[in-house]
Image (cartoon, rainbow, N blue to C red; front, side, top):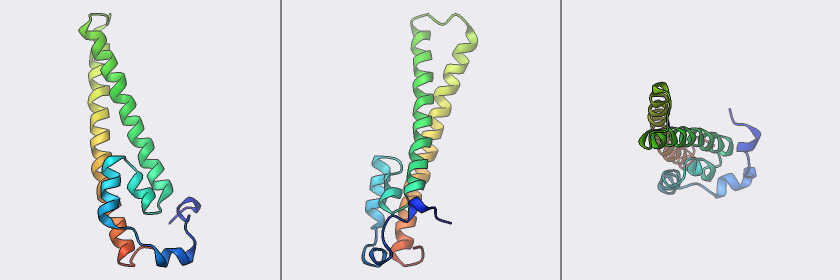
Length: 118
C-alpha cells in the first residue's frame, strides 16, 4: 500500500515516464535511498536514508570510543566492548541496508518498467 508521499507524479505522467533499473541501482549504490526516490517511492527512500544514517552514527560512536582506547583515555573496560559493538553493529546495518537498497531499487524499477507495479 503506497502512502501519499509515494504518489508524487500525476497519473498521466506515470504512463509516460518509466524508471530504468540500471540507473535506479546505481543511484542506490551511490547514496542509500536515492534509487527508491528515483522510482517515485519517496517514503521508502527516506526510510532507507534514515536507517543508513543510524548505522553511520553507530560507526562514528564506536570509532570515537576506539580512538579514545588507542590514546588510553577510556577508564572502564566495558566501554571498549561497547565501542567495538557499536562499530560492528553499525557496519552490519550499513551493509545490510545497502544490499537491500540496491536490490529493491533495481527490482522496483524493473516491475514499473514492465507495468507490474505502478
